[in-house]
Length: 572
Image (cartoon, rainbow, N blue to C red; front, side, top):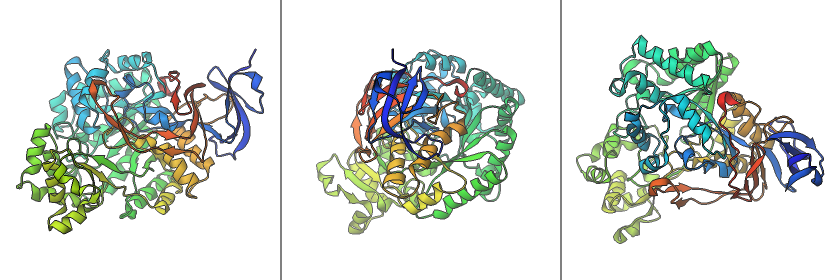
């Protein structure tokens, strides 16, 4: 009788602990790593040949938005194509529980803009067989899963439940009774397995607004409320908090980053638990921004304050049309013209009286694109406009003597908003990337936003890109460090139990890949969402096997249709 369910033979093991790589075999039994060393083929029911390849822990992605997609895509692609075996859902305070039946449609509409998840897909794909948060977890538990899932309590639906939608939208301070109800919901959720709570808090001019252009309810959360909610974790001595934060300008004076840093530290001290700061991001034109963030994270570590920085390690470019684009929402003028049906957007974007306000887009923070002049026009549907294809807006503006914003919008409007634009990445310098990821503050890799912005972003590829860019093509980090940062490091920060390393007794979440063949395939459009909706994806090459809890979910980049993933209540 075979001793192991699966043996992975002949590979080079990088175990995720930062120890040096070594040649060996992995024996798997009952979803766990049972033995490491030299094993014989006859000892395994199934043998995976890893000769000439690396064997490493499956990747752990702490920042996804697969809360809806998990119900129609058990593998949470594109992340699982790129070796991700465990994810955290419910990030940024957004999700679908607790939600009373009369607010279900409103909850779906909210996600159409702030995370750009298609309404038709949610309408057709969400089962809505829950009301409370524990009932939501039970639904996720029942549903087949191709990856492991750790759930946050998203604070937007919690605030709406406790305060009512209109009052939560008003920005008023919750009453003591309402705060107590929020704390009760968090406690109840964590009793049933939630890992903590999350919130996006971007103030009145949120860069990710609600479907109607108003701020998300969490954008208006008061600092005092956040501190009270953090105390729940301190009282329980468990869990962690994920938060994105830009102080509400009407409530503070002084330097915004100073206030941000102070507030995160107060949260960490109130909770006594890890706080995930979103996000450390490089803009090649403004390196002092990420350097200041890195220095602050380092200072927190030195002072024993548990604030951890999640970092956008992948090159971020966007392909979009103005039928879907919403990532200039922190400018009221742009937020107003990009809300509403396509016909309304077309009318407003064509309005010459609105153009002066729209021309100020380059005065923004530069988190998405440095300059409209740098944006490329990829395709135009109208034949008379196809002369502009594959050209930069700045070049056309110089030729036609027009402002770049007018060039962009004149072409888009003449094309019925069908023109596809591409914003090139603003973080391509490998020396800056090395500076960020080698800092003592140890940035957490990721911020993939997997499951969100699927019509213009493919962040789920971050893990493959990290190995290629940092380990193979540039001498930024050794593979031992890269795999620690992709697996063990996020698992430890978020409280995943017994995952993220290849040691005996650990859960057998594993990737097997050929470093030389590892690749990210070009963007493509696929029509695989419910309700007839489409998305952009980027597939991976070079992974010969991906295993979740000891069961192969992908072999030679093909899905096995096995669903061994688990809902990890309290990380276990």
